Length: 284
Figure 1 (cartoon, one colour):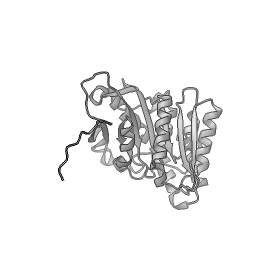
Figure 2 (cartoon, helix red, strand yellow):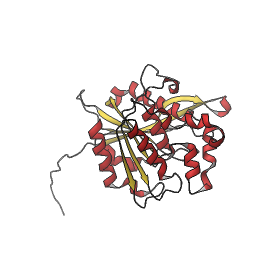
Figure 3 (cartoon, one colour):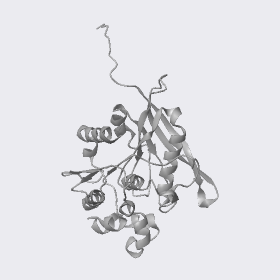
Figure 4 (tube, one colour):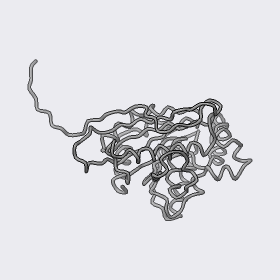
């Protein structure tokens, strides 16, 4: 068969810039230097200097024990095709540093991208923090700490680490209530590893790592997803985050996914992508 067809252009092409070093941190026993990486799904460059895309910073989970910042890239392509640049960020796990090291890393990645906004044709005024599980905790922390300067450590401090929207998927909120409310004891140790102490034995450390501590009138809009069959992070954590945001006059939507467990494929269905896209269009 031989055919001649005319193909209409209905969406942008995408490029992947993989494993870009955004920061250097202490490595082996503090005696070496370790690169922290991020990967960028971006749109084909255009000669129009006015073309600027909003950015979704993605933080994968892993119980703060292990981080593969590229593992979810295939699922994030749908959001790239919706008109967003995707920045998937590596952050240090709890074997390398306790909290707030993970938040320090996340904010360093955001500052790096603001510095390089022109290179990637991104809009530095439209940044979104999104993540799942432990990465959802990071997304929430970013959404409530725009005005907390102490978490900005490292390079590019002349650039802000602010985000405009936070989207946690089955994210940890309060380490203590997540530990106590979990229906599985298999992951209790991750909270000790994160904080450097058991959350029930150190209220100050637990509060420092709890997004609820920082909610105020500068808190950004939140879109929260949590499954009602999650045995790792209790859905009550997500509900409490939503209720506290609303109580403090923050903008927030909460979606409880029926029959969804932790790391459930339901989170990557077209219906969820559309909900995310609609929320971003509303508030960006």
